[in-house]
View 1 (cartoon, rainbow, N blue to C red):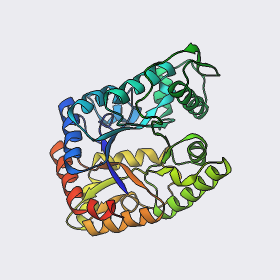
View 2: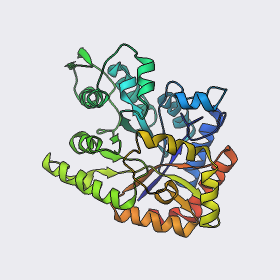
View 3: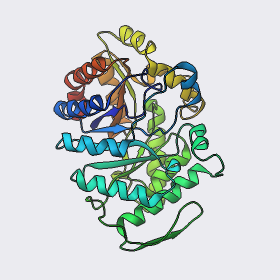
View 4: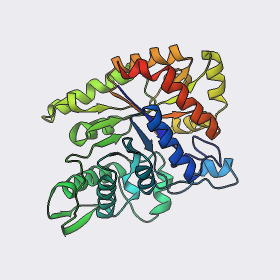
Length: 337
């Protein structure tokens, strides 16, 4: 099983306090991740501050654009892969420019890019950027994914859709990878169906092991009905992590973090189907053995990649320490699983 680290490209005010990280800090996290043996880093995508964050913090958070950020990380690392978790496609109206950015970055990084695509957890953000544009964001993602595949593979591409239009576009270079991995994010059935039809993997967030098994079975069944080999699809859930000396200490620290407040905010959107299971029970919060046991349960439930692990801390030094502790005490037991 692969293990990756969440990169705080757009996490101030959400998962982390304001301020939290500088551009140098972001690159340092990636360099640290490569040194410790993590598979990849995954940054998220926000353009404007959410309403509840404005109410909590008087200073606006910094949201770093992930694709540009990865250009700097690619130059500072050699083997570390980079992914977007998620690139919110409905906020990026020019799909040709998006495809060009992705292909260019894949070339400059030596083929180390992976792209997670999602609808976006906050509709208010989409409406702020495009107040007069009426759209079904899920349909935009479906059409955008089709357009990306076409632009990445065809010499001359044309598309006349509801949301995206272009004609006779000869976009070169293509991505260096013959099939650049495209993951579909989201916890609901529509996201699973989207991944089964056209994705290289599925990226849910904070899913309890029993639910993950049920959803993975659904993903595989739907992929088979589409004539695809389900065994090639990555099941790559994202989780929150806090590694403590005891389970009790870890849960207490977790509940003091900005991360915990963020999960509560998502209970009305991305995590609304999570049910009554406590956030501390679903996520990787506890002592090393507790986290190892939970990680092995997730592996047995179908997870192939613990993608974008976000550490529930409030400072950069804590983040780097947690990354190292996890790499030394937990990761060896899960990578070999």
